Image (cartoon, rainbow, N blue to C red; front, side, top):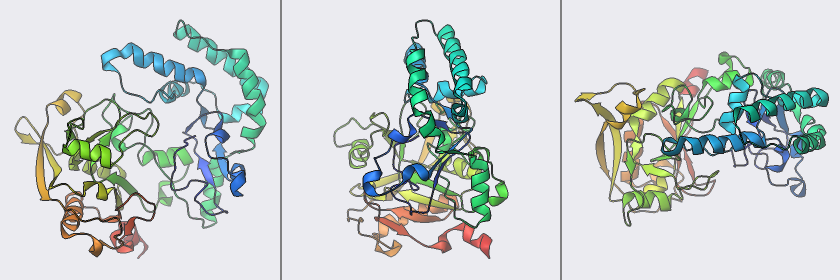
Length: 388
């Protein structure tokens, strides 16, 4: 269960709303301990968080295995968060994973847990697991966790049929998708549109607006190809500006994020896969103060412009990026609340990105606070055309 703030965070949503953890999610066991204590705020979070009975559990030993695996890779490490996500998915695919619903019958849970830990210790010599201590812990939290558990497939579809608005939030990015991303430097799941269907068990006919969120520049945590990357360690450089002004340190790991210019080929690839109806362009304010701003417009390889995203890491490493250069701006944009409030050069940047993508940019983040946002309205959302 992520502890990071999100649009549907229980601290931010209305009292009648719920947060659903989907079927293809991986959940940390002490799910209720990863958020701010809500009781003092008068919020009954436990009755509003719905955990899928089909969601798999990440155990402490999964995190240990994650670290061991990264260490073994040496210079070829993936750059994972070492939170055990990959090993937990490996357990799921090996069909010896354990799901939240298994906690309802603790004798069954214990049998499955002993089988799983035995398999893990055989596969990783030297791995030590306090099986009895872990079982005691899970016995102590079982009732509290299962109280938040539900059939999220039934729940989500019922809410839809009742006319409720449903916001589905994805994490990571399409370029970290296990199938579509820069494999093997990817996450272990599908953070793209397909997971909405497989995670919640809903029909594709029920999906309405599909919104892509991107910064006004590129970032990446960990290893892997980054065609538009800038060096952020050079004092006074654009890379340093983006990293420092943008506060680019990983939320989970604390590692400095790699930074670079906006990458249009990757954004078009993501748009092709996901079918975005509008774009949320965040952190435009971070570009304030740069004399010039570049946009990675296209990839070139062996003298030819590429029309698709290479699957080969070798090809990715040999790419030449073709850039467009636009003039920057110096004006503070944090108080802008309409597109017209933006400096002319900032407007030109947004419009050029929109033109290259072929998808309207509806939302523009122009400051660090929640309300520092421009909403251009439904006219800049292709999903609104579907209503007509």
